Amino acid sequence: MDYFVGIKIDSSDDKKLRKYWLWGSVGFNLALLGFFKYYNFFVDSWVDMLSAIGYNTTSSWTLRVILPVGISFYTFQTMSYSFDVYYKKLKPTKDYLTFAAFVSFFPQLVAGPIERASNLLSQIVKKRTFNKQQSVDGLKLILWGLFKKIAIADSLSPIVDDIFTNYAHYPASTLILGVTLFSFQVYCDFSGYSDIAIGTAKLFGIELMSNFKFPQFARNVAEYWQRWHISLSTWFRHYLYIPLGGSRGSKLKSIRNISIIFLVSGLWHGANWTFVFWGAFHAVMFIPVFLMGRNAIYKDSVVAQNSIFPSLTEIGQLILTFAIVTFSRIFFRSETITDSFIFIKRIFTDFSFATYQHPLGYRMIDYYVLVILFVIYEYIIRKDERSPFKFKSKYVRYTIYSLVIMAMLLYYDASADQSFIYFQF
Image (cartoon, rainbow, N blue to C red):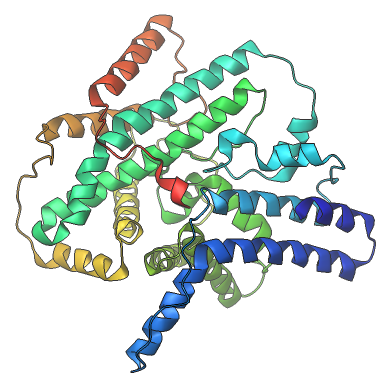
C-alpha cells in the first residue's frame, strides 16, 4: 500500500490529492493496527461500560486472533515513508524489492529502533563495502546488548514476576523493590535489543539511530524522554506533535498537544487501560516541566558534564526523576488497572519491612551488586552510548570483555522468560 501511495504522492502537484493519498496510507495502516491490536480492547471496554450502567451483555464480538509480533514498530516505520515523501524529504523508490528491504530489515523489524525512511532507505540503496572498524563496533554493541539482556534483564525476570504476581502477599518494601528492579529489567531488556539491532546493522554497513542515551541519568522527565525510546519520541514529534502545532500556539494548545502525544504513546504500547494511565501519568509529570520552560535545558548535556561526580542538585534531580519514572512502571507492568491501584495502595498503607527471598532460593545480594555495578559502569560511559568499551588501554578493554562474558555465564537463568518484553508491542 505505502509503496504505491509514495509514487502517487510524488507524481501529483495537487495539494488536496497528495493529502488524500497520504490519509489513505495512514488510514489503511491504522486500520490494520487497530484490527489486530485494539479491536478486542474497545469491544471489551464497551461491554464493561454497558455492564456498569445495568445492561448485562457478553463480549461475543471479540476475535481470537494472534497479534503479529512487532506490529506497532513496522506499522509506524512504513508510515514514515509516506510522510517523508509527502513532506518532500524523500523521493519514492520505484523498486519494490528496495521498499520491501526497508520495511523488513530484520535487525530492527520487531522491536526497533523505528527508522525514518529518509535515513534507512537511502542507506539500503547505497553501495556499501566491508568496513572493519564498523563491524568491530557492531560486535561490541552486540556483546553489550547480550550482557544487558542475559545477565540483568533475564536474571531479574523471576524476581519481578514473583513480586507482581503475588503483590497482595508482600509488604511495601518488597513492592518498591519489585518495581525498582522492573525499571532496570525493562531498560536492559529493551535497550539490550536496540544495541543488538544497531550492532547487527553495522555488520551490513547500515547505521541505525540511537534509541537510548542512558535515561536513568535524566535530570527531569523531559530529559528522560529525550533519552528513552528515542526513535518513538522523534516519530511522534515529527509526524504528530509538530503537525498538531507543537508548541507554536498558546500554552493551552501546547498542553493539549503534549497530552495527545502521551496518551497515543500509551495506546501504542498496548491495548490496556494500564498503558493509557501510564501515558496520562507521564503527561501530568511532563507538563509542569514544559510550563517552567525546562523541557529542553538538558538537551545537549549529560549529568556531571564537566566533572567526575554530579552536584548535590543533580543527585536530587536524578533521584526524583528515577522515582517518578519508576512509579509509572507500576501501571506499565500490572496486568489490569485494578491491580495497579491496589499495588499503589499497598505501598502507601503497608509500611512493614521484610527481607525478600528469591523465588528460586538464590542470594539476592548477588543481584543487588550486579545492578549497582551496572549503574556505575554506565555512569562512567554516559557520554557515548555507541561505545560501551571505549577505553584506550587494551588491557582494560579485554578485562571488561572477560567480566561481561563471565557475568552472562554466571547469571544466565534457563528458567526465566527469555523473550524480549517489547516483542508484545
